[in-house]
Length: 262
Image (cartoon, rainbow, N blue to C red; front, side, top):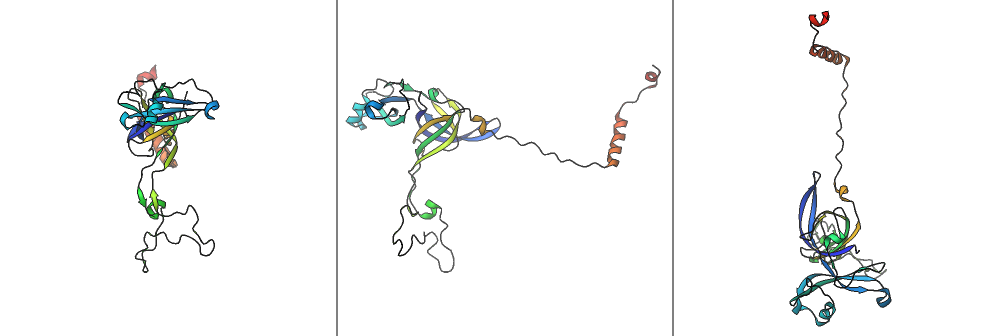
């Protein structure tokens, strides 16, 4: 069975695990449909192409409509709508899946699974070096009235006589493919196909995400162990001990005369 599904990002919220508050992100994951099977003999590698979401059929190209016509699944192919997103998942050995098979959330993930998630981060437009690369900026005194957020020197003189590739400078910020590892499934709603994932995930609300299962049984790692209370040991003087022994003797009941006779 595959270890990958597609989903969309929802809003963040919080939940409690054994009294510990955990920040979680609500995701809508699956169901996905198998749209193509690639083999080593025909394509040079083995993979399964997954389809997720719906789009209007009139906004789909003729070539893509022909690719989707192989799917015999009424959920992903109607007279007005068809599959919206396509992603390939590499596999090491031949799979029993066929084109048109549906894969649901409960088929892949369960509570406590460890997940690696990939998405496109939010686009922030053109940004300077202070916002984009966390530069400190120039001094605010000694006549530097216009250098507060300037990048400063960007290279050497005669040697090498140019600016090195990859130099941190102002430019477009965001809209990058971001992968976050070691996120944990806190809860699953099979009926609504919703999943609560620990921590934040990249992208805007409604953005496409790829979820890959990498482990299981990791839910207990989110719960912090409560440290043992440190009890201060106070040295007691001998006089205090004697006073305590006297008070204990007073509290003990004394034997009556009748009990002594017996």
